Amino acid sequence: MTSTTQSTLSQLQTIGTTSCQDNPSVNCSLYNSAVICDLQGTHYVWARKNCRLHCGLCHKVCRDDPDVNCNLFNPTALCSPDGGYHEWASIKCPAFCGLCPHETHTFLSTTKISSTEPLKACKDRLDCRVYNSTLICSKTSIYYPWSQLHCPSFCGFCHAPTRIVPCRDRLTNCDEYSSDLCINPLYRLWREENCRKYCGVCTGFDVETDYSSVLG
Image (cartoon, rainbow, N blue to C red; front, side):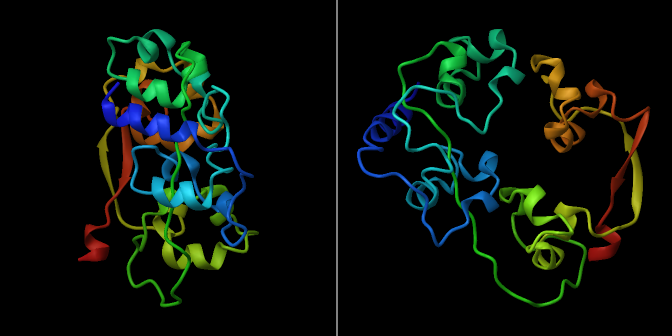
């Protein structure tokens, strides 16, 4: 573990001595904690200030990040001190990996909703990955009109010409995850992007959206 991570964990141990709650003016549940709550991410400072409860920054008890299903991973690959994921595991899955005591969690932030200009091309205006797609993309959501303007690609609201591409995995270590990766609906978008071939979500070839002709 790096000295930076150790320092961060020490700082986290001091959190929770006062009443811990999210900023009432921020709807923290709107944001995708897997993106905005990353301890090493660019949104951590904002999240620590505004979404401490949502991101798990209040807890002094050693436990796994509530937004990460640690059981999804292969403990041999994830938790090994000689592996490439050990530092991440010590932050996200300390209880699962037997790395307690450590005060570890991951957290983030995002830009606020704004702008009413129409979308001229089929592309997202923001880094929409930071948002909770279930909340912003649903047709019954109060954020649906906003998401149509700002996150049409992320939410699947627009269609562009497609091209046939080989069915292959974007990652080379899909086999290090448990089989739950390929059947759990919570991981559908992730596996379709990163482990299509391994999980059998495409046959021989797959279709990929090509925005070049739309965006010029």
